[in-house]
Amino acid sequence: MEPVLSIQNITKNYGPIQALKNVSFDVPAGSVFGILGPNGSGKTTMLGIILDILIADAGTYSWFGGMQKDAARKQIGSLLETPNFYHYMPAIDNLEITASIRQAGLDDRNRVLQLIGLAERKDSKFQTFSLGMKQRLAIGAALLGRPKVLVLDEPTNGLDPAGIAEIRSLIKTLNKEGITIVIASHLLDEIEKVCTHVAILKKGTLLLDGPVNDVLRCVDQIEVRAADLLQLQNILQKMNGINKIQLADNSLLLTCAPGVIPEQVNSFCSNRGLVLSHLVLKKKSLETKFMELTS
Ligand code: ATP
Image (cartoon, rainbow, N blue to C red; front, top):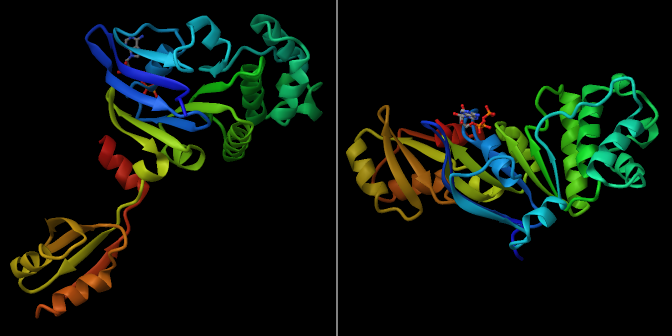
């Protein structure tokens, strides 16, 4: 299937600061696509470019297989910063204002309120809403006019755990409705919990992109020790399924292919006359992998 968005070789500088360096990736249709990276890695700049708010210095991007920009823009709802809702006005009236700005038609408001789970509270004043509800209404405003794609910048920033859970569940619901969602976030946890695909940025450079399960797959390591470390290393170099051997603190750290278990390492060594004095499976967290990638 054709990607919803294709980004090719985008570069953006702010004076001497290189915010994006030759970044390319595709956003598959129907995905929840996370742009993940620490502060200052270029996420917001990338969203600004694909929403036509900023102009890239080099590179191109195309929506919906090369649709003309104005037509494409009508298919995209975005939330880069919290909209200015009127505190004393009910939710439905606040949406009316947004609907008139977006020329979305008033009949769409009730559909949106249903989708964001605020139909029951449509007549409540904005100021009576929890932070999570306020953010849901902001996402609702972006949904007016039935966009096919939703672009969100750090959608759970500043929310408490209950608010975060509400937004995550809303994102999943919207995706089930067929909306492709692009989210910029510096939170690994967020990307892991809601995204199907991810692109990892570091200082404006794309490190990796693809399905979350591939990109962020945990790689376990096995730590081994023996009286003669050199002999141990020589033996393990001959074992299939060991991708990398590193020396660390009088031990060897083995990065293995999926499915290799410590018992296999033990029997491989003992069959060759070497007794291990230490054998431990070290689970590597996603956090560690992310830190290694980005630090
Ligand atoms: P954050 O999560 O902190 O917003 P980010 O990943 O979204 O970070 P950007 O905001 O895109 O990153 O910033 C990328 C780089 O460009 C940073 O070094 C930032 O300081 C710089 N930058 C962003 N906007 C401007 C601007 N208007 N003028 C100068 N430098 C800028």
